Length: 212
Image (tube, rainbow, N blue to C red; front, side, top):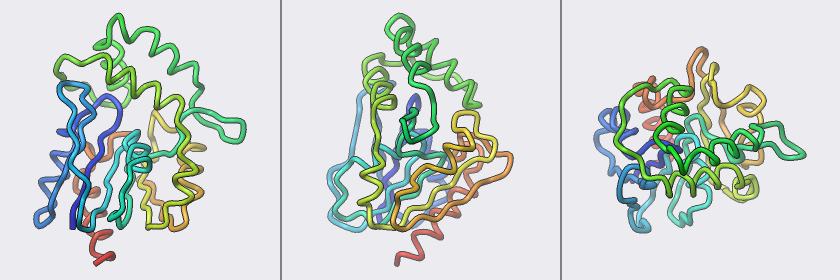
C-alpha cells in the first residue's frame, strides 16, 4: 500500500517527517509544491494508494487523477476555503491582502501565516511564484464537486481549536462525500501532523488496515 502525502500552503514535504517516521512497512511518496525549491511529484501509481493530505493539500488530492486511490485522509482539510453564497468560510479579502503583499515580501507573508498556524520555526527562503499560484488557488478553488464524485472512504480529522478553520468550516467541509468519517481533537490546532504525529500516524495505519 502506498501512502502519498500532500502538504498544505506554506510548507513542504518535510512537514510529514514526524508522521512518516511512525509508519514503517508502507511505501511513502511525497508531493512538494515547490515553495522552497524545485517542485516534485511522484508518477501515477500502478498499485493501491491512500492520499494523505494536510489543509490545502486536501484540494490538491481531490483534483489529482487517482485511478488506484483507495481513500483519502484529510488532516485540518477542506474542499473549499473561501466563502460562497451557500457556505460560510474565510472571506476572500483576507487572501487578496496576502496576495497584494506577497510579491514584495513573500517571507514576511509566509512567516505571519505560519505563526498564526502555530509554527514559529525558521524556514528556508521561499519562492514567490509557487506561493502566489497556490494562494490564488486557495482563494478560487471550490472542490465540493470533486468530493461528491469521490466514491472512496474519506477520514476528516480536525483540530477543535484550529485558528485557521472556523467551527462552521470544520463542520461543513467534505459534506458531500459519499463515505465520510469525521473526528475532532479537542484543543488541537491547525498543524495536527506536526503537533500530534502519533495520533495522525495511528489514524493512517488504522485506515489502511481497514482497506486491506
